[in-house]
Image 1 (cartoon, rainbow, N blue to C red):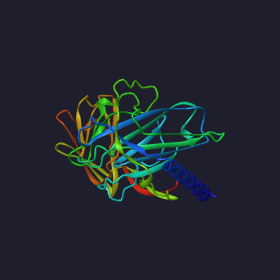
Image 2 (image 1 turned 90 degrees about the horizontal axis):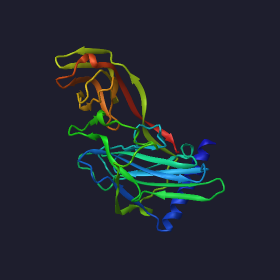
Image 3 (image 1 turned 120 degrees about the horizontal axis):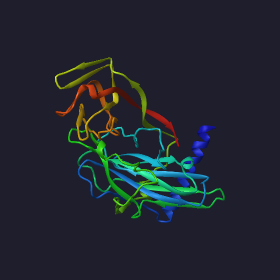
Image 4 (image 1 turned 60 degrees about the vertical axis):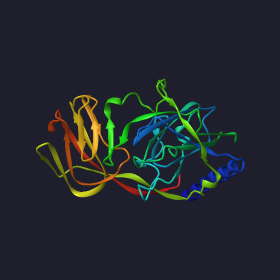
Length: 311
């Protein structure tokens, strides 16, 4: 029964994409032109709907990784999208999410956190998105990425060690929320080459995605001359998340190749968002202000592919 419903949704999406493609509909790529090499970007658009939709599907295409939010809620249980067998292959890939339950009558914010795969990633193939839906009376609505979208550099970036640098000092109001002053946001740059008819493939009933599988604690935490060495009983692929207490604003913490710049809040957490690495023995260190006693908690977050049932 579940698979029948998913197949129906898949065919519904495919028929809509085919119909719009025959009408010469193509989705423009958009990018944030003010990015430095490796910089992550935030994109957002406000969509006004007449009423709660009966059905709404969002397709996002990217040459990197994304996290997608609607009205501040992550639309997927996956930790990053899309799933890539080769994390160095930046070929554009599309994901489709059923976002019906996240939308409401009136203003709705669609927001995308984009991360490149490398420091040399294309500045053009960042994001292309299409929303299609219908109201209860059957009347359709749709939109795609265009010049109305806004963007700005995110507070994280890919560093030259192939991991992430996160600046906690810039973590302000929720960038994906509706109550946000966008005066400092920039218009996106749209590109003439678009993602459209020739780029679509019929959606599969199932697709893999990276999900959080397990949270583990280190078996041993050993003081070293410059920090802490954390030993886990078993190796895993994923992230290290640490909770810091009473760190100074601007203080730099290193978790292997991940770098976190502290906000100075009483408690704060440091954890990558997109780069997944193998871990067994992890070294935590910092600048001259770092004290091992500032590390209040250490967790290993194991991430593994899991097959999703369609939408």
